[in-house]
Image (tube, rainbow, N blue to C red; front, side, top):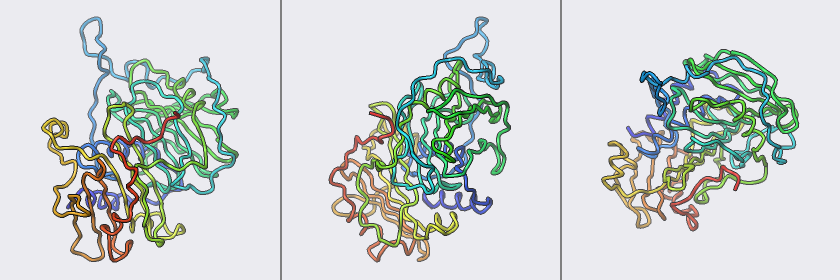
Length: 400
């Protein structure tokens, strides 16, 4: 059983145990995004929903005068009640979304970061039908953090009439308790609110406002270093976001030749913030089910087309991957490229194709039975537009 099969089984188990929600589950998006990056290092799987246990650690680089252990985040001001904000509020970016989003087009780049603080290492954008419903999330992850939960900055846009929920913590339906609320300075000309949550003993600050009438946006900040003012970070991020509804999500290659009977339901792109980082991923999920179908049904019969960088397996790379395989060993060739192909014995299941070193990339196609024509994943690969593909591709998630 490969990574995709494991991901599907675990995802199906989660979905079977929950009632589909109409809100964006930003906590799950954060967690899945963090796990996805780890999997991209080891196997290139973009949607691996796996259980990760993170132990409690402390702030690096801080030494108490008496030589005792460095303080944890809880010991340096986390979970303190919100105080009135008196700091600087930068001028807002003039871009906007004129009306609350009634539907989420997964091919559209609705938001980009215009500013981010230091200490963040990667970015991720997801739009369309997320695991808990339609929405948009833009996330900046902090990989090296003393925060035992997710740490970083996340932006969420919600469809018309949907209010941002409290963060999800341990358990499918358990929500983090609200510690305090306070008025925030106006965000982009609209009244806003700070809400502070206790997520398993660490802070999560949410800054909320309406990006358009009856359309809610939020910037969530989970501290990743001692001494951070989450309110200041949230305000600076929110004021400098770049919104839009006409630009498409930038991809490393054009996905063409997908049958008309399937439609895109989710786009997921991620990549490093550092110029020398090579780990990135871009993928589109298509569903054979209509948009009126239950979200679980829409995700149960899909075609996934993903791209990530091909890397020569040197001793250095093997050491960094710590025993994991970045891609599966080839067992065939497709258009002169080494490839790995597998098809489940059950004809109602799926087939997976991984084509290696295609203009410096790995192309992975995973398709349920009945979603493609008789040529299957190999035929779809041959119809892709890879003419402008580059291995040094980066997602366009920051304002240039």
